[in-house]
Image 1: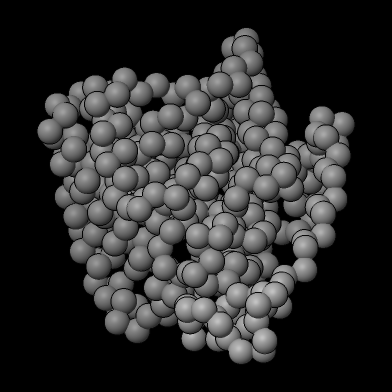
Image 2: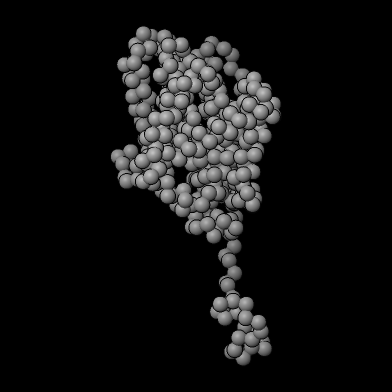
Length: 386
């Protein structure tokens, strides 16, 4: 899912700092975002029912920022992607192949539970698998964003202009375009500024009142705003809004995602925690939990009086958190490795070893050029360095 493309960055980006190494802080953030994803999905059937306004408000609040955070982290873990052969191999085996496998599995499972015939459709993502397809497209485009003068402004413009298009579920185009600014932000923002979010004192202090105000706003919005605005899959026509209204609300949703996402990252623990390491194996939790949620829906669990109560919703939330953590453990990841990162040796060409680089010429510090036949030990010609 959020695979890390660690390799040498392109030359133009070298001045921004060293290549991104795995930082437990970002794995921690990824795990906590995964927990929010699982909770949101288990809340959704109840949130759509009348009489659960508080839960619906919590659902809107989580959806305002949890996917922007996920997509931002995807950009962060893609900073080193330069479309090198070994990186493309990992992209195919770690993102595209799992998309094809899990779209098929989840589509078959959904059809079986519904008693409907299964018709494979690999260009239309099934529920959570949209993220894998979007990640594949985002990461392929990463070298392009490094080449642009104003990549983030361009991505924001693309996101907003997407509302004028007749967006359909095919190829996850709607989400790919509308969530693009968060991927590009993770990809190109100054590394030191991003790292400064970790435990930032003032931002951390502001996070609680910001989330409190956002929760009140979400409660107010429950009967007034369709949650589909936060899914980022439909354009103006799909949300039955005029383009001017769509632009205003879409910009507001983007801004909310950025502000709440920054506050979320500021609240992620900086020091080591007992759950460190689980974030690096969270793909299984992301892809497996829909099977449990769909089974609960099919069993009629959401129609019980218990889940309709505050105590039942607290138990449901605790169970969703526990499930997310359990599915993020290394034994689960090892067991499912053939489905999470299948080996494609039979499909991919064997890579040729890279030739050894030519030795660099000896440079004279004064003028940064190799000695010529007319030099007598003194630096001749125009001094261009030092």
